[in-house]
Amino acid sequence: MKVKPMEEVISFLAPIAEKVGVEIVDAEWNMREKSLTIYIDRPSGIDLIACETFHRAIDEPLDELDPTFGEGYTLNCSSPGLDRPFRKPRDFERNLGKKVEVKLYAPRKGKKIFEGTMSAFGGTTVTVVTDKGEEIFPLTEIAKICLAIDFD
Image (cartoon, rainbow, N blue to C red; front, side, top):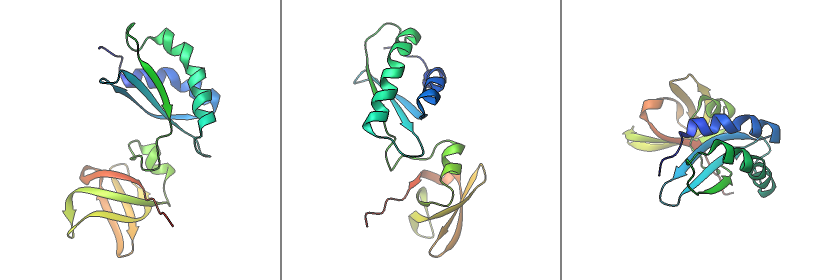
């Protein structure tokens, strides 16, 4: 099945998201399930009501955009989840000063996973203050970076 690029879908839906008071953080097409999932967020967090409101707001406009060129699909709206990886500069900037988990492709100092407070983002590097000191990670070495989840 042919689908339009996700960047086009996100750009098309962004003004609607802004009117509803949410931000589109990602979109993905699942070929096997024939489903389009739009991930949304806002500073106060996402709940079922926000997902439903956004879903209703984009349902008709998406029909006009026709992201699947006439083929049927399932539309899902979802929170990005607590362990959503940072992908865009805005993700890094929004989470400055927060506790993060960094997973590396290759070990550094015998470890592949670091936790600490993200103190800086320089566009190509991330600075994290761990319990052992400051670490500067080039983005090219990071397999995944996301908020650290504490279950206390």
